[in-house]
Image (tube, rainbow, N blue to C red):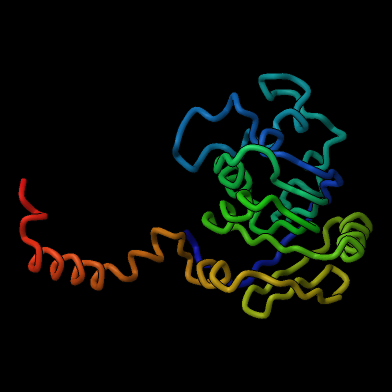
Length: 206
């Protein structure tokens, strides 16, 4: 995945609590294991008025012209709850979102996003309220996230500081998931295996 250091973009205000993974990517679209192609189904039941996805719901925030190119998502408590499907961050990333800001996130969803290059920023409810107001009053205003400094700058210039797990931060900065992190030590792993086989050759017997 791509390393994450900084990101600047339009923020879309999704004013809903307890958004579960089935709302993010409905179960009928979980038909493949490739990571691409899910963005068109993101929030399908909210974005569209028909099952086929040909008639947009004009009242849904992502269908409004000023938020169509949003890459930062503002939302409310417990975002990403429900089943642990990794397709949810795949759909968000494929649609174009790189940063999600909320008071809290479901744990498994948080980890899945980290593994797929999406930065989740937890902030206080009062801070989220301020960002919502900025996104509504200045819908084309840009917000920016700096992972190294652990700051989010609102469209009005106000800086918000956030916390992040040190390992998650390192993985995002380097563009590594857990497998990629492990492969950094491939030579050491091979040396260990070679030593183990030399000491216990019967383990390698067909």
